[in-house]
Image (tube, rainbow over all chains, first blue to last red; front, top):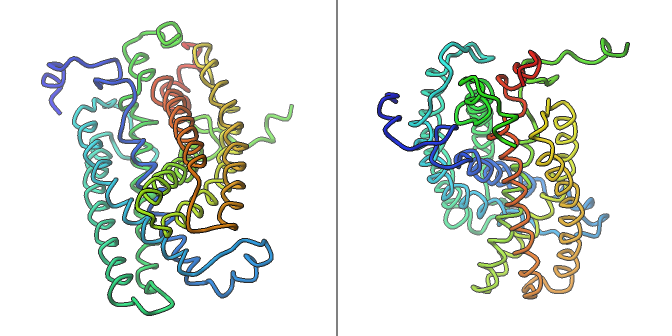
Length: 199
Length: 166
């Protein structure tokens, strides 16, 4: 975004009207819920193998319980990710990254931000799509089946996790290498001493 | 003299590409907060499926927090923490270790509750859930400060400390 426009706002040293970015915190929820959802669906599918282990540990476990986790966690991930993406776009539009730095993947700040922005919308679409697909399996197609999920659903879930890894690393570069919305990094860039100012 | 036996550190002062601790804590933060959310909704709607979801999320959070602490200690040890950071890093460490005990104890309690009656939970458990939720949020706030305010393991801060600017 045009720095003249950004400067019209009253922002702190980190380039935001508040001290801590919101997007990275919502990311915990999006990723945690999605990954655990797929993980528990996998646990549900392989229930026969795990049954003796849970019995040995004296932990009550049912297949349908694991599929409940798979469904509800995926649904929650879907809901929260709209806010993750919204907060992400708010903060990316206020970003003023270092222009002369290349990331560990050889990308500049602008390329990294563009890919991360597009990737975010793609992931939101995929997560919502997975939730709808999961819902059809749970409530219609496989309502009376012991295995509530299809293999293809699990494989695509794992593939989405790979996209999340790439996408998340781009996000990590934005924070850790370009110093976007990082108070200490921005103070250093201005030639000020974070040690004295952040005590 | 043992220095050259250690792996080389990159521009984040880490032996691997990026920080791991903030990734592993996804599985503590998301699972604890969602477990509490499920408990509250389950309590008021009497939907016992949500209690099952809550229990398994707490079960997973309990395993994850110990892995989070291992990586947290490695990365705290490698952080070039300047003077201003120290009180925050100390408190984050103290609460982090305490949370491992607290979360394990709550999950243990939940195990007993679920064994006796998986269809309901006592109000006292919800009360402890409120306390845990607040504590986790505060811990996240401290961790956020370490990264976003103090910039630990970000390349500009690592560079500044190594050059003696910070």
